[in-house]
Every structure is written in C-alpha cells, then in structure tokens.
Image 1 (cartoon, helix red, strand yellow):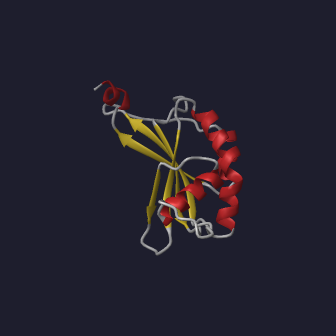
Image 2: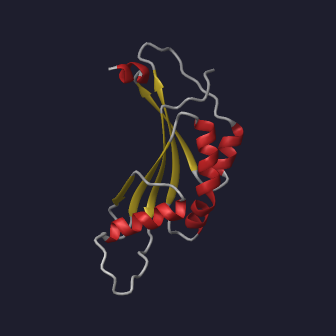
Image 3: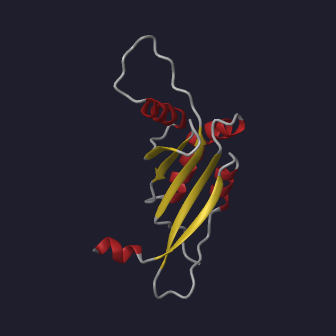
Length: 147
C-alpha cells in the first residue's frame, strides 16, 4: 500500500448556472462569462483554472486545480474553504454536480497499484455532497517530469 500521493487533483464543477451581478450603467471590458467566473471564484474562495460554456445555454463547466505537494492538507483546506458554498449551490441548483478527481499514475511495468485515501479527508469532502473519482493513468509521472 503506497502513501496518498496523487499526481493531480482537480475539483470539477458542472452545470454552473450563476447570474452576473447587475451593474448600474458601468461599462466593463469583461464578458458575461468572465464576470460569472469571477463571481464563482469569489463564492468558492478559490481560483478556477477553467471556465467554459457547456451545451445547455447558460450552463458552465469550471475546474479548480488543487495543489498536490501536500494533498491531505490541500483537500482539507478545500473542504473548509469551499465546501459550504458548494453544498449550498448543489442544494439550490446553481451547481449540477461537483466531483473531486484524484489522479494517480500506474507505472508501465507495474503489476499492481494501491493507495490509502485518509478517511477524515474523504469525510470532509463527501460531507459537502462532492463526489470522489479516482483516475489511474498508465504512465510514470516521475520519468515524464525528468524529460
């Protein structure tokens, strides 16, 4: 059993349906999508790395990249900082789905791969209605980083 060491962590938010804050005759160089992204960033107390329209009109996909240098601490901070607003947004349907994707590498010549997900981290994330997804990639990230 290896230690909890994902090579990437992303919080993926789909079905984001916020409305831009009304501005009283003020001209802004920002698009409506950019305003919505800023509003979401403020609500989450996190910066989104991606914010794109989805197929449904007025619906967006957003992603928050979570640092992996100290994944347990980063995930607990994510839950504390953004968990309550994510739960509220899921409840009132401003957000369709929230998924935390934990990405691990499976070494090319490996026979098995396992990791332990700390229970207190899972409880902190899942307690706010955030689903957890584990992705395993056939790659050796350490070799890729050396190139």
